[in-house]
Every structure is written in C-alpha cells, then in structure tokens.
Image (tube, rainbow, N blue to C red; front, top):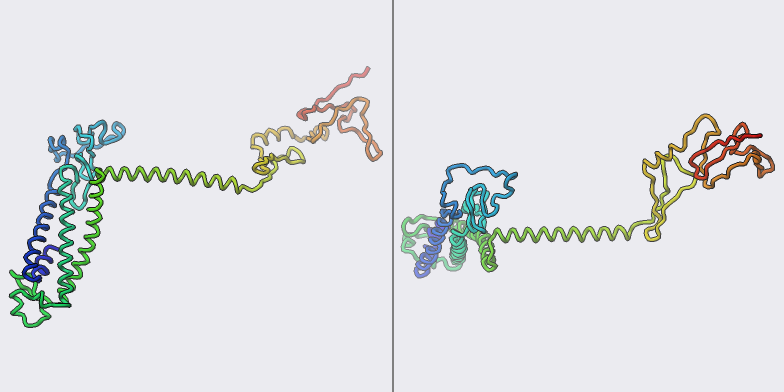
Length: 359
C-alpha cells in the first residue's frame, strides 16, 4: 500500500494537497514501521529469564507427575527461574513472558509488558495510515470521472498528448499507464484497504476496551471461558429440571402384573399408587429362582404341591372322605393312598405326613 500510495495516487493530487499528503501519510507510515520493528524485536521475557539469556540449549520437558503446572508457587519448572505474579509461560515462544497479554502470530512474537505499547502504536498507525490512503484513492477515483484535469497538473503531463494516458511514479520515474489500469489498481487497493480496516479497527477497539477495563487479553479470555462454563452448567441444570418435570406430568398409567418364568398363582398382582397410576413390577431373577425351587414335580401325583389363594385345612382321621357338592363322594386330596392323612402347613411351604398309631 505504501508503494501504490506514494508511487501512483499521491503524485496525482493537486500541489497543495500532494505536499500535505506526503507529510502526514509519510509520518504515519514511518511511525508504523518503527513501532512494528520494535514490537517484533523487543524480547518480552521476564527479567529473570533475560538474566540467564540462554536460548541455545533445549528447554527441559515438563513432568506433569511431579509438577502439574508449568508455573507453580511463582517458579517456572521449564525456565527454572522464579517469576512474578503476572507471568505466563508461552507455549509458542517457550519462555516466561512478563505481564503476558497474548501471542501475536502476525508479529511472530509475544506481546507483554515490555512491548505492549509498541504493539498498540503499531495497530493505531496502521488504522490511521490505511484510512488516509483509502480516502486519497477514492478522491482520485471520483475525480477521474468528474474532472480529470485536476489530476493532471504535474509538469510531466505536458508531454502527454492523449488524455487516456496516465503517468505513475512521478516525479522521479514517470511510467505511462492506461486509464483502465489506474481505475483497476484503485479498485483493488480500496478493497484491500477496507478489509484491512475492518480487521484492524476491530482489534484496536478491543484493546481500547481492555485498557478501559484495566485487564489483559489473557485475563479476558480466562474470564469469558469461566462465564461460558457457568452458563453451560446452568443451562444443563434447567434443561434437566424441565425434562424431569415434563416426564413426570406426562407419565401414562401403567399396569403390569408381577411375573416370573413360573407363576406363583393364577392371579396376578400389581402395585397401585394413587399419584402415579398403577405401576406393576417384575420379580427379580433371584426371587423367581427361589420360587421355582418350591415347585418340583415328580412321578407321584401325591407329591405335587398346590399353591392356592386359600390355605386348605388339615384333614382329620375321621374325615377321610369329603362330600362332593354334586352328591357324590371322593377321596380327600389331603389323604394318602393308604388312608393316612396328610397335614399341610398353613404357610404352604412344606408337607408333613402324619403317622397315626391306632390302638
């Protein structure tokens, strides 16, 4: 932009304005170059690191088992020096930076307390220089269509007969250019200048905000990450509470009988809750296995156990035959084949054969 500005467009300005543009924009560009070189060349490392000034040897590898952090208790275990409270070890530069702000990849250097103001002046001068250059190029672009004679006041244009021919790099090395070339180069330069202004203005505004808040870029990023993590936790908690409340309100009435692989009885049971409907459950595998152990079928019919809802009464010796409701009589189910009565425990868990001794 300096070559295009000082070589093509500033020489086309009328004499009073061309001199002012040379002085103002020249000063801004010179200030930018000096500040840029200073920001790049100054070592922002901590004073204790600068005292050693030994960057030739490789840095030791951090053992996280012994030291979970690079800097612990104001001591850097990589630089092997004691540092200040606002020092951070930059992973890109691999050294401790005093008053660490950020690592600038455009400068290929860290920005810390020793070179921060050079960095700030670099950004300010870049914004101001590009802004002035864009204004000058826009003026030349507009006057090229409205009044081109204003731009052709240099003595070298007297030797040019055609108005479509323009001169660049005045006054030292005049070079002929076409009108289309002047306009095309102006359009490309303005587009690049506007894009640069958008990026640089955003960066400048951000650092002005940080200066007003008296905080560094690193502190701002750490604070924003903390705020974002808190918001995510709060959002997750609210979503969990909302989901649980919706699911409990929309829970349908469910009625499921207690089931096992082998049923306990012909009837099924369910657990009923008035507030959440009827909720059934299944017995666990261990309980079902215990229930299966009570029902062991053998070849003898009299050894089968019957689990009924009502517990049968024990049969007395004189009641060996029960009356059939239909008028007939049959052998009582609690009497053995030899006429010996069988007494069933009321809990239904065992069967005991009673031996009756007759006189």
